[in-house]
Length: 172
Image (tube, rainbow, N blue to C red):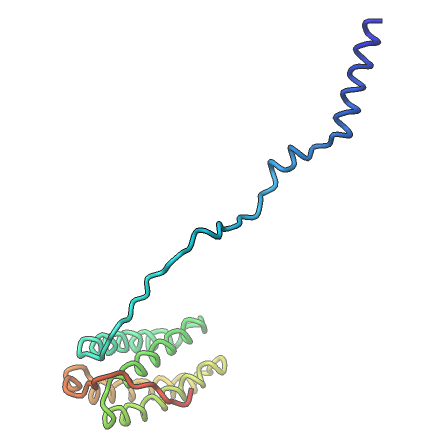
C-alpha cells in the first residue's frame, strides 16, 4: 500500500509537471530584446572644425605620396593584385589632396599628372599585366614620379598653398 501511494504520488507530480510545462525555465534562457528607456536621451557633442590648407598638411601629403610611390614601384611585379590596387589608389588619393591645396595655376599643372596617373590606375585595375605592360607602366610611373618630385616638392610649393580647400573635379 505504501508503495502504491508513492507511485501514485510520483505519477501525479509527473503529470502536473508535464502539463505545467517549462515556460519558466525557457524564459530564463532566451535572451530578451533590449528596449531603450524612452526617458533616457543621448546627446552627442557636435564640433565644427575650421581647417584650412597649410604647408604642413601639404608636406604630409607629399611625404605620403612619396612613400606610396616607392611602394607601388617595389610591388609592381608582385602577384598580389589587391596590394597593387591599394597602393595606386593611395598614391592617387594623396595627389588629389595635394591638388586641392594648391593655387589654381599649380593645381592645373598637377591635374595633368593626376590624369595620367588615373589612366595607369585604370590599366592596373583592368587585370593582370603582361611583362611588356608592366615595363611600360613602371617607366611611366618613374617618369611621373620624377616630374612630381621636380615640380611639386613641398619646398617648392611652400608659397603656392591656397586659403581654402578646393573640391576636386577630376574624371573619376
